Structures are given as C-alpha cells and as structure tokens.
Image (tube, rainbow, N blue to C red; front, side):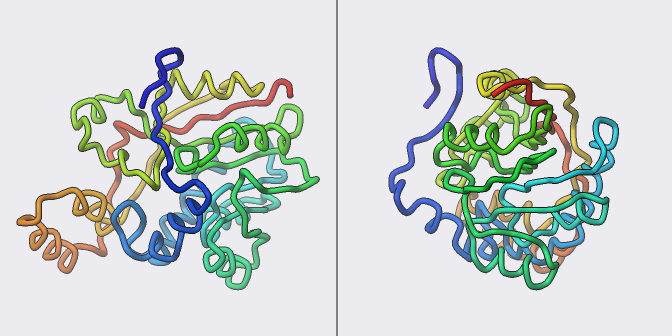
Amino acid sequence: MECKKCSHRFTEIPDLENHVSNVYSDDYFFEGAAGYPNYLAEKNILLKTGKRYSKILAKFTKPGKVLDIGSAAGFILNGFKESGWQCHGIEPNENMALYGRNELILDIQTSDLETYKTDKKFDLISMIQVIGHFYDLDKALLNVSRFSKKNGLVLVESWNMKSAVARLLGKHWHEYSPPSVVHWFSDQTLNQLFNYYGFEIIAKGRPAKRINLRHALSFYQEKAPAFSRPIFNLLNRSLGKLTFMYPPFDLKWYLFKKLKD
C-alpha cells in the first residue's frame, strides 16, 4: 500500500505477534531467498563494509559510542570496532547474537529495536539494510531518538523505491520481498520520516557495495519461473563463491543528525 498523503509505501504484517521469530529465524540467515544463503560466508565483505562506513563518518565525527541495529553475527560492527568505535549492537536472532558475543567478543544483545531498553546514549546509531524491516516504524524511530545523544548521528543504508531500476522492474524488483521487507522508501519519504523525529540530513551517497554472487542469485531465484531454476543451480555451483561490485543504482546511504527530541 501507499499513503496518499506522504507517499510512504508499506505492506501489512499478517502475524504481528510472531513476525520477528518467524521471519528472522535461522532460515533467514542460511536458506537464501529474501535472506542469505550463508550469512557467515560473507564475513569479510561485511567487515569491510563497517570499515568503509567508518571512513565516511570520519569526515563528520570522531569515533565514539555506536549502537548497531540488526547486527546479525556482528561482522559490520566488528569493522567499526577495528576503526576505534565503542561497539554495542542488538539482533533478534539468538544464534547470530551468540556468535557475535562468543566469536568476536562484541556486546550484542538479543532484541529488536522496538522493544529494546537501555539507559545508554549513543554518538552514532547504525542501520545498514535494516529500516525496511521494522514491524513498528513509530516505536523504532522513537527509540532511535531516545538513544541518540544531542547532535548524535544516524547512518542508514536503504533501497530507493523511486530509482530507475525499481521503476523499470516494477513488481519484480528484488526488494519487494515481504514478509522480510515491509517498508520501502525514497529520498523524499526517508527525509520526511527523520524530520518528523527531530533529525536533519547532513550527507548522502551511493555505497561501494560488494555482494556474493550466490547471495545475489538467491534474490532472483525465488521469483524466477520453475523452468529456469536449473540454470540458477548451475550458476551457484560454478560461480557462487565469486563477489562483485553491486551497481548502486537503487541503493543509497544517508547520514542524519539529531536536532531535537
């Protein structure tokens, strides 16, 4: 659906009570489709993502205390840690959070953002590929505001529903993948959202994002006709371990600064 007043695009969640446990089970991280074929295999790619964003942030702030939303196993958060940030994270999947705590010695709590409670205030809140997944956008953004220091920053990486790619592919655009993704944004609607909660945008750009070919293929295999699936299987077996630069035509990063509660 799309709001006639603000143009925000979203879908209803049929089983709200069990949404998080159903969608972000272990299958999300290891069964492909709208999730990951093997999340742990993308460790090095995601570590570099954290380091790359740390370099971008260095133009605007010094390393401080960061809260990473949807940390999974902590690979992106570990990139922030290696760049000098004091790292904290939340992740609704217990096994992913355990991996980050045990293997990477990171403070990752098992929780979703909507119900998370803390007295800490953060210099940065990181939401990489997360904002489209919130089951209660209002509760999530209220907590972002509560947990941010005055003049604190929020880093968002999100897909652009008004991009040429999204318009060209229409209903076949890979980000139209509920129940995992339930919100879709444009530059305009994302700005409106953060303005409402007391933030202003101070920078944006297109990420130099690398992606595993097997991960990319899993997006499209789920929606492809049945007769084409042997081709996807062949590509996975022969080329699945390769990585490539994702063309950033429908993907952006945004940096917001808190002005008021």
